[in-house]
Length: 361
Image 1 (cartoon, one colour):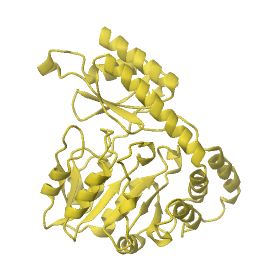
Image 2 (cartoon, rainbow, N blue to C red):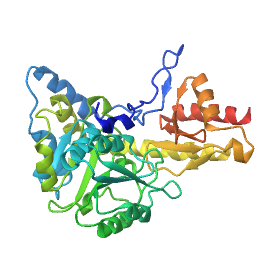
Image 3 (tube, helix red, strand yellow):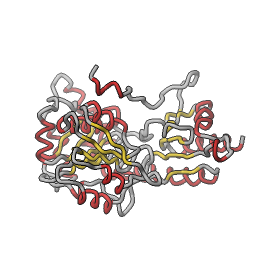
């Protein structure tokens, strides 16, 4: 085993099953409860007859659809990937060498850390403020050995976001040699006027890389398809290590069709955001702190039993929900926090009922 891997642990997936429960309500993986676009499903049916052929290694149908959606990004600067996870991995593998530093925020996508460390880089975590990425702390963590600054925006598991003016300030104050990587997996859900996924700052000659996914709002996690907008120098490096057929034919065609159905995507986003708002309002009334979220999940903070004299913690809430066939996800490495993905209106009414039952017991 490589020495770098000795400090890592395998990724722990969100729980899927509960013993004795045939169909638990799985709210542990930030999946969409809504089916993909009908156009996407039709594209799936249309392509299955060609499974005896290799996919297009050039990814043209998907990259072209993305270019039409974001016309200011040249086609050559768009690269599809096996989920945004692989995109992050490709960037790290293409750019990092042993001894390089990667700066991340205190909370963020855990696989970003894994990919950086596996490349022999030193990971530096910048503390957050009020569950938000703290740009000044990130800048203080940057040094002469920093190669990449990686920001998850919106952030996971907090669900918070950094306004575009702060991303602009970060970009303006980073040394010239540093790549700024923005993971915007949940961008579609954000309805804030001061948010931008970073694509507005993208330039083929710049330093900003933006990774996106079809696993969340588009409802296609089973196909594992994502993409990145990469500066030309980064794209050239990535293509040197990218496997020829890293995105399968079904994923390419279905994702391209999903992009075209903008009305359906907006319907899904509106449903999610409405359900989230009503759920958060109810949970707040129960005395549980809800970290303000712009995504398809919320982070709940329960009382600290050691300090607040309250035994209604996240560990107990998790056990109570599991007992009733609901799978949330513990977060934060302590008994205070619980992350819950948004389901349908009916799903979240059930979760609210069970959390109320727990708090009042």
